[in-house]
Amino acid sequence: ATFVVVPFSSSLIIADMNVGILYLTAVTALTVVGVLMAGWSSNNKWSLLGGIRSAAQVISYEIPAGFAIIPIVLLTGTLSMQEIIRAQGVYPWDWFIFYSPFTFVAALIFYVSALAEANRTPFDIPEAESELVAGFATEYSGMRFALFFLAEWGTLYVIGAVMASLFLGGWQVPAWTDNLVLLNLSQFVLFFIKSFFWAFLAMWIRATLPRVRVDQLMSLCWKYLVPIGF
Image 1 (cartoon, rainbow, N blue to C red):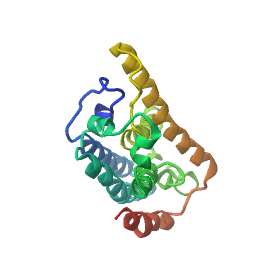
Image 2 (cartoon, one colour; image 1 turned 90 degrees about the vertical axis):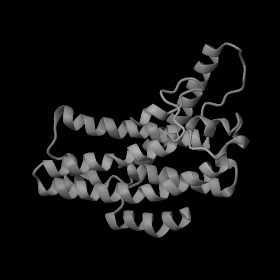
Image 3 (cartoon, rainbow, N blue to C red; image 1 turned 60 degrees about the vertical axis):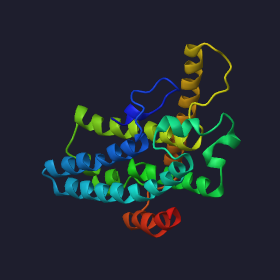
């Protein structure tokens, strides 16, 4: 459902909604329901605890992520993903991440919050193997287990796509050809590279940083990211 509003190129988008970014944040918020239901329906108190911890984490980190999106919406005057990309230019100095110090900080806040929302290291407490034996997914195996992590890795690309769209100029390429097919192909490739840069960065962080404690995770959100977001 999130991929519906992801603009892969100037023409390659399933639905260019006028409330695109709002729709995307609303759909990603629904993951809480799936995780809670998974933990509760396992009939295992540890899975239920893992589900509750995950729900608390996802709901909390949606707030700074929302704050980080607002400056871009105010700059462009639109919620459409395509229009946000069109408001930026081809070159790095035209991207919103370098527009002002505030948008640069907003980009960092959004990325950190998005990692926490997607349960990625160092915020992967809901599936903390050492403490909760995979958390809400403990009682699941085979394809059901795979679907949880398929969703997580899908989310990783969506995070990259949103970062690329809001802060890195999205699919903007120089107008090097009049052939629409070739132009869209080059836009798609560039957008994919920009999105995958953020996915690669998440993997790099996973290989570098240790997992934080649950109280550190929540205090980072409420004591630091929310006030900085304001």
